[in-house]
Length: 122
Image 1 (cartoon, rainbow, N blue to C red):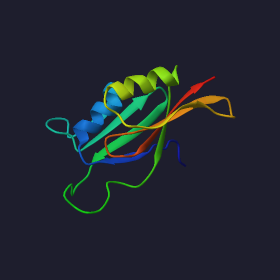
Image 2 (image 1 turned 30 degrees about the horizontal axis):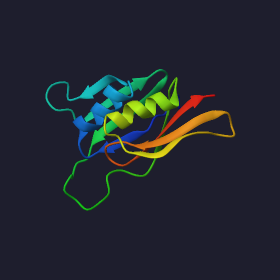
Image 3 (image 1 turned 30 degrees about the vertical axis):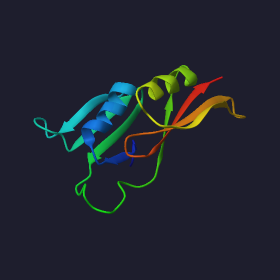
Image 4 (image 1 turned 45 degrees about the vertical axis):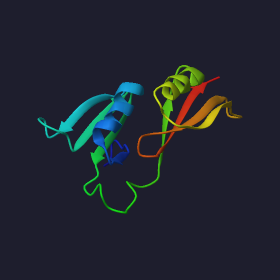
């Protein structure tokens, strides 16, 4: 019945979020609506993973943007990836460290304050 699932993120500033996910993490835009003009929704793919990002309808409200979540993104080299993101001004909230399950992990924040886990195999 169900064949695929992916998170849909809510962004206060969709172009800024696109810059983070597309330009820094390497996601490719696979769908945008509308096709012309400023998008209000995009689908993006990185390897076999897909996410959606939708523009927040009421950017001036007091309701926090979206729901809390944590995106997991694998990199060839966790330390190099975090270095690249830090250079781009991305807040690093947890420095790279070896984990007992055999991966190196760090955490950064996307432009809306959502946590993004950066992982690489040891």
